[in-house]
Length: 537
Image 1 (cartoon, rainbow, N blue to C red):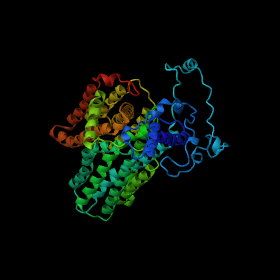
Image 2 (image 1 turned 180 degrees about the vertical axis):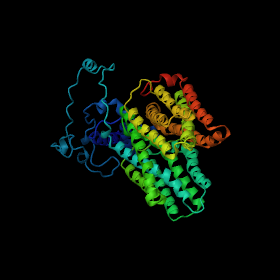
Image 3 (image 1 turned 45 degrees about the vertical axis):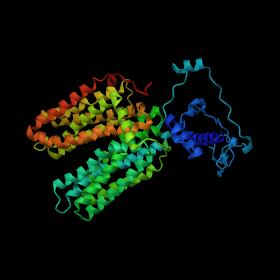
Image 4 (image 1 turned 90 degrees about the vertical axis):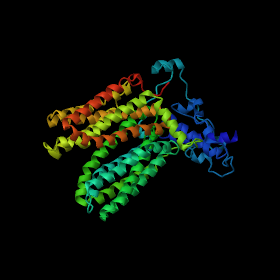
């Protein structure tokens, strides 16, 4: 009991400090309790047996004005383990009784007087709630500093990705004796590890602190692109080194994506998840557009090598910002990585809506990638040229920014149904290109496509984070990434040969029909049509 008292003291001290910045989510509070228990018990117990949800029995933790359940005076300035620590009073928040600014003396710390309780029937009448409790107010994202650091880190990193998409291609082609085939090989070496290791990335992200995994992935990518910049700046034509470094960068991405999806619920409360996902996508899409626009200027003025060096710098800056994102330690798992992978597979396939929408959007994104990467440029090769096609792609990028902002605000009763329907606009630009429609119609359709896919992304991420247990979220997300990445690559590979074997209009029509049929198939799922928002009951 002495050790348990100490763990609760550690928990409440950190809880009160964090509450100074605003309300905390259930996930964050549970993480604080687990971290305190790990510190108090040390290696004496298996962390898998600890109860991170014990705080739920104490309603003052989620009252508007919490108070201390275990007064700091019950714990000596010498911990139960015999190690010295500063007096608890010195580490309490300044505005709490006993804190540094309090007039109470250390020996007379008083618990704040409980606020006057409103009768339950009155609370029910005031709030309109069927539970008799006041509905929680939306938590402003500005009250979550860890999320803001994560947002800035991701925005900086995605800006660098926008640079690399242009700089790597022109950098490889600028090397002496390089060929388009060598460029394809380098890009394939970057893409293949993403598909091969994405499931491994999900397992790792569910076993370690996700923020630290993202930090390690960013630093790894930064080192890889620094060396790539050096090779291209010095005009080194070592194809083997280029492929190896591209593979390292691709592997870093495979570790990052599942961890990124699983981290958001640890940083914001549940009622802010959709807004957080919308803000993240808005920042990422904007940074990607700016990065792509800046890439041409940087490559033209300074060369592809310096553009890659700037890209590497963005990864290092992102890694430094991730140091400011504290996440509680993960409990030690007694299972092996292979068992964790199988468990993630069961979690994924046990939910019909999950694998149905994953399959639908994998097919949709394969068709979109085939159109944007191959079939669209071929359509404008003889009419309009690169300038018109650039306007089409830019319209999609701008639409994705608008869609992310919209996704943060909409509150559909059936979010998965709306997410599935959001795929349909992607068929419009494919059909218009096949019919040789005016360019302005294609531009408008691509804007709508970008907007609808971003709305889907926000609703989809929020549904995953609400309905999948946090301890297996990254593994489930990795299966979604695996489907999208693998079929997107196949779409790019098949688009050119398909257009040559048939005709360009037929290939585009096939892509449009694929989107329509995949959406129709997705809507046949009862769970997709009817599942409400929020956590499962």
